[in-house]
Length: 308
Length: 296
Image 1 (cartoon, each protein chain N blue to C red):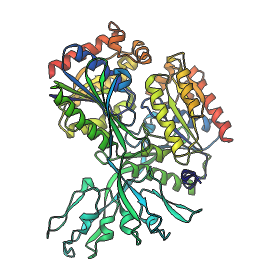
Image 2 (cartoon, rainbow over the protein chains, first blue to last red; image 1 turned 90 degrees about the vertical axis):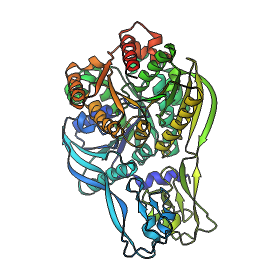
Image 3 (tube, each protein chain N blue to C red; image 1 turned 45 degrees about the vertical axis):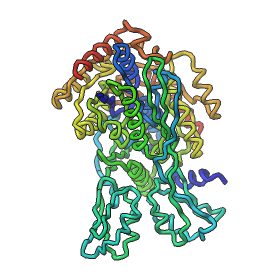
Image 4 (tube, rainbow over the protein chains, first blue to last red; image 1 turned 135 degrees about the vertical axis):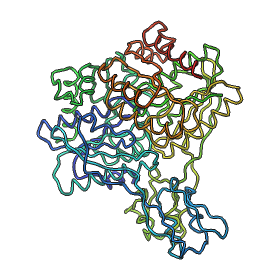
C-alpha cells in the first residue's frame, strides 16, 4: 500500500472537506474559499470555514468580522531546576535545534527562540531536572459572519513553528465537529507548496488549486499539483482572472500532465474587487455579476463532485 | 554593497513584478547588480529575468528520521512522542512509518526508541541555482523541495550564496525578492538587509499582512520605504495605507497605478518597464527607482 493512502484516511474529518490552495500568492484563494462558503450556506448547508494561512490570515477580514474565543497555541519548553541538575549535558546532546548549550561542568544554557518543543531534553534527563514549561506560539480563534462559522489560526510574530498552529486549527475543527453538526468544512491555506500547505490539505476530499493564466501562475500550479500527488489528495484547478489572457493552453497542458482539469474559470470582474475591499462576499454583494455567476458555477460543480 | 529586500506580507501584490522591473532599471543605469529570489516556495523571478543556468547546488538543511526495520520490534513508543504526527502506523506490516513530509528531524523518536532503531540524517530539502540573467547580471534562486520544511534555512543559504556572488562581482546592490508572509522565511529574507521595500495594495487584507511584516522589518531596524501597487484599486482605502505610513513614519516611495501593461508584460515574461516603457505603471516604477537610488 502506498504510505500516503493511509495517511490521508487517518486524518480525514467526518464531514466532507474542501481545501482551497494554489501555490502562488494572491491568486484569489481566500476570496474563493469565502464565496464557496457563502454558496453552500445559501443552499442550506452548515459550513465551517477555517483559515490555515497562519502567517497572514485574512478570512475574517474578507468577511469584515471580528474573531473571539482566542485559545493559545502552546509549545513545550524546558524549565530547568538547577537544584536537581547534575550538569551531565545529556539535554544539550539530544537537542538538534541547538537550543541548549552545555559548557563542561556548567549548568545548561537555554535559548528559548531556538526551541522547537520536541521534549527530547526532558526525556533524557536522568535527574528529573527538566520540568514542563511552555511558550505561546500563536492562537486559534472563532467567529461568525453571514451564517458561516469561522476558525482562524495566527502564528505569533517571530515564532517559527507554524506547523503547530496549523495542527491546532485542525484540532479545533475536530473538537467543534465532535459537538456540533456541520455539512461541510472549507480550509484556506497559505501560499507555497511546503509542509504547512501539505498539512492543511491532508484529508481533504477535494483540493482546489487556484491559479491565473500567467507564467507565474503556471509555474506555481505545477508545484502544488506535484505536492497533491505526493500526499495523494485529489485536486482540481480553478482558473481565476481567466480573461487576463485568452490562450489557456499552457495551463491545460499542466493539468493534463497531472491528470486533472480546470473545474471553473472565474473572469476578472471589478465587482469582485469592490466586494473584496468592502468585506462582503460577491455572492451576496452582487450576485448577478459575471464573477458571482462563475463562482456559483464552481460551487455547483464541487457539489456534484462531492455528491452533497 | 547595499542589500535591498522587497517584502509585502500578503502574496500576489506585485513583489516579483516590481523586483524584476527595478532590477532592469538599475542595471540599465550601469549599477553593478546581483539579484536573489528568496521566495523559495514559489520562485518566479527567473521567469521574468530569464537567464542561462550556471550552477545548481543541492542544499542539505533539513533532518529526517529513518527507521532501521531490522532493529524495530514494533513497540510503537515512537508514535506516542512525535509531536509532528510524522510517525504513522502501517497496520498491514505492523510497523511504524515515517511520513517524511511532516518529519522535522527533532530526533525525539530516536531518543525514546528502546531498540535504537531510529537514526536522524541530514537530507537535501532544496537547491540554489546560480544563473546569469539575459539583462546582464547574476541571479541566485532558492528553491525548496516540494512539501519540505525548513524554507527559512534555504532562504539563509540563498542569501549567503548571493552575497558571495555579489562580492565576486564587486556589486553595488544586492536586490532580494522576498517570500510572502511574516514567518521564518520572511524573517530570514529581511535579516541583514540595509533597506526594506514594502510593497502593498489598497485592500484591507494587504494592510493587515503589511502590518505584520512591518513589525519584522522594524525588529531588524532596516530603513524602510513603501510602494503602493494597484494604487487606484480603491481610492478610499489608499488613504488608510497612507495614514498607516504616516503614523509609523514610513517613507512613501511612490504609487504604481493599475495598468493593463502589467498583466500583458507578465504574460510575455518581460519586465513591464522594458515591455511598455511609456506605460503609466512603467513611468511610476522609474520614478520609484530614482527615488531609491537617491536614498542609497
